[in-house]
Image (cartoon, rainbow, N blue to C red):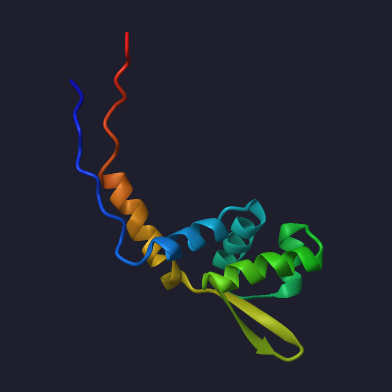
Length: 112
């Protein structure tokens, strides 16, 4: 006999947004950029390039993805762009992960 838990609905209208956020966090360099911004609160692009150890163009591409997801914001302070985190952007992903954590899947039954 298997125990079936009700399937929880995805957050209304947020499935696409959650997927974009998860994808944006899906690369070690982007996670490193976020960790750097958490420590320093604000950084210019060259600081982030140094933190990732990647070429400026590669770091720029990772920043573009994070900015597109809304996780990172950039303000132009001539001649540089100053980047910072927008933690509120992660609220849909956080709520989704909390829902998963509160409703774990039942243990798998082993067929003999």
